[in-house]
Amino acid sequence: MEHTTTPRPKHIGRKVRHMRELLNLTQDDLAEKMDMSQQTVSNIESSEEVDDEQLEKVAKAMGVTADAIKNLDENATVYNIVHNSSISGTVSGQNYNCTFNPLDKLMETIEKNEKLYRELLKEKDEKVAMLEKYLGGKK
Image (cartoon, rainbow, N blue to C red):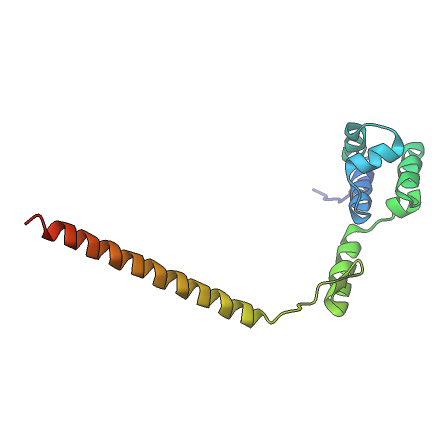
């Protein structure tokens, strides 16, 4: 028995969705630019094949070329974003470096928890004393 593997077809609709997400557009945004409903954009994104004319319209609305969508390598895109952000500390021009010492934040949290615990113990002791006083008068 021979086993042959056929390459999976490129899911153009999925590439449209990934490009839209990379451009930080919602389906509603894209639908508005294309003068169509959000549901139509959703249908395009769920379609394995998108005709060239429709793809050109989508690409134009997103400000990219149809070839950019067709040739979008999702794995490489994710790798580049993660790799570049780990090197420079930025994603899409935004700086995500810590501006505080995480250990200081941890110690602040521990101190707040200790304070709350002490307050709870104090309340418990007051309630116990009040109950003992109340029960002591009933004997």
